Length: 208
Image (cartoon, rainbow, N blue to C red):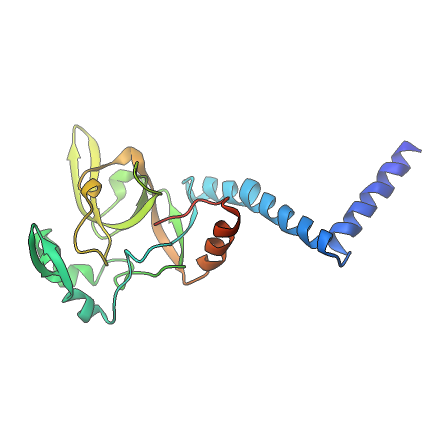
């Protein structure tokens, strides 16, 4: 008798979630989808891709390029305290135009893009790779590596947002322990779904 009651209850719940056409059922479906994605799918992807942040949404324009590659390459930047071009800035870092054109995401990416990360070992990161790292002052940041240093067996990165005129103060010496992953795939604009959802509910981590 008890088993029959459990089966009936289970059938009613199943029908309510998957068959009933009501606002209550829709709300439960949204909550269920969120729970499955956040606590099953997302952690599962993290295990496969070796990073706690397998999927991130871009929420700032620090990696955007204005116009063509050529117009961006000649746009304004800073060389020390002096105004210069992006070309001159990267040349000071030992990066020629031909080098940059071989980099992944050579044309940057945009607000609302989804980036898939892989937890490449810090020692396997190369100049030109786009990485995500933690910052004590802001949300995790996704920028391009422009220099790599090694000290006492530990790797340190210098990064810069393609759109930015120079590296931010905390980007000049990024230790490997705050590194979270390397961008390996881009899905244009799909991240707006996540951005809107986060602004409404505030439950997901955003990348700037």
